[in-house]
Amino acid sequence: MNVFKRHKECWLKKGFLASLVIGIFFILISFVANSYAQNFAASHVNNSESDILLDNIPAMDVHLIYSEGALLFIIILLRSSSSVKSE
Image (cartoon, rainbow, N blue to C red; front, top):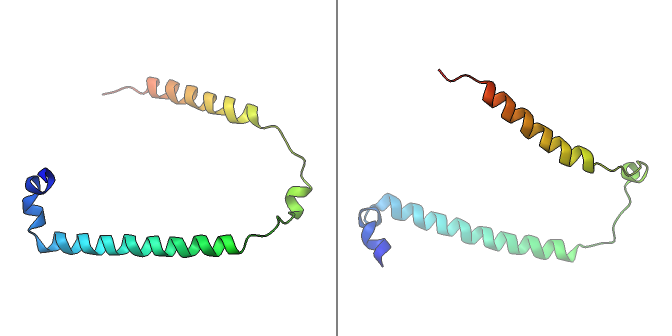
């Protein structure tokens, strides 16, 4: 109840109330659309299909690039930001 008292002037504006009603309407429509999309996706579940490109490429370990690359990026970022002179 305290929220309504603190923002009393907003609640009295017609534009605010119209925006609130439209926003609630759109979020309800999005919930309905999401429900239909979930039902559609669940009803069309199949066995997995093979991928001609990914089946012919060997698996590679990219852990080093992923973890050490991120660390190297952070180090470069910190070194470059410390060399910037503030005026």
